[in-house]
Length: 113
Image (cartoon, rainbow, N blue to C red; front, side, top):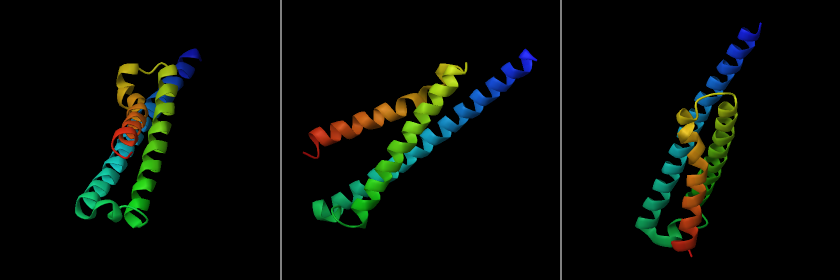
């Protein structure tokens, strides 16, 4: 009976790890699309092209969705790691949220003063 419960725990950890990976990849894709939209609009029309219109709102929604998704991926990866999944396989979900937060903070501090 112990064997079955241990196997079940590993399957749950594997499912959480897979979901964390998928969520991290989707979050990075959403953030990349938002950044591309922002960069293209800024290059074409400057500050007026990204403030108080659909482009600015889309970028804000993409940033919020990307940050939320990467944070959930981090939580699921920690859960999977604590359930004895290999930490080396959880690298992307574990570093996505801190990297995104650091990038946003650096952009805010040095680019969008």
